[in-house]
Length: 158
Ligand SMILES: Cc1cc2nc3c(=O)[nH]c(=O)nc-3n(C[C@H](O)[C@H](O)[C@H](O)COP(=O)(O)O)c2cc1C
Figure 1 (cartoon, rainbow, N blue to C red):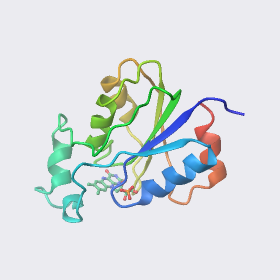
Figure 2: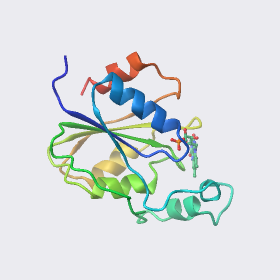
Figure 3: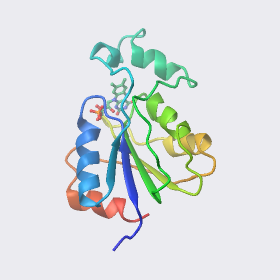
């Protein structure tokens, strides 16, 4: 049995990662926090074919930090599992905002993602650079149909 306190923190624009995160938190008996944008993404914001869409412009700028609707206190957790959709082969900019929004010193942080097919890429290294006191481990991409058992095993191993 895993006695560590786990937080599943996730961002999801269209609900796929949300389902995985909810299932993971339930299966691993973890708390759940939604990294919600202060300004929600509309359908047109998410159009990656449009060079001027909000998501395209944000993702082109490595220093972009979209505001979060609310922050959370991570101090009571040992392990923070951070879920998101892959955007342009990496973590969405709001995940960068999240990594800078709290003190992760001494915490184990592990990313997980959903995607149209891309792997999780360099996201662990990107997140480590933003939270130098944390121990950020390589993460994993999950299928939207990942089973509760698979998610539980993964979440409880850290
Ligand atoms: C702006 C944007 C960029 C994306 N970039 C990628 C990508 O580089 N590789 C990929 O496999 N999927 C990409 N996708 C697809 C999402 O990762 C995929 O649909 C994900 O499961 C959506 O999760 P969500 O419903 O939690 O937002 C992108 C989606 C959007 C909206």
